[in-house]
Length: 117
Image (cartoon, rainbow, N blue to C red; front, side, top):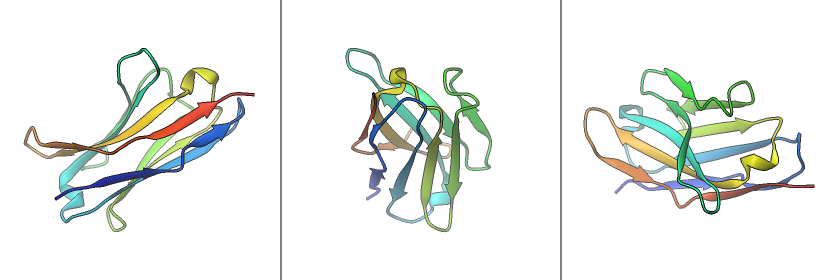
């Protein structure tokens, strides 16, 4: 059974930084593409950043230049470094794992990020 556990959320002032972590239990972490999504109140869940098994990376336009996704296959963890945070970045952030070559996916429970002065 694959489990994803996010951590690192919290309250930060505009312009500040946070680093989210998503630890994945189970084996074969390197066989999964990993992604961060977010969902703000009253809005649909949206893709923030995606990193493939091979390390290819994509970002939402709204976070390019501010957020950085990275993965550590040894630690079975994916990270999201968030800099220059804005109030509109406020949301619950979710980690997703996508098994290579299948439609199998797993979601974490989410971690709240609030950007406010």
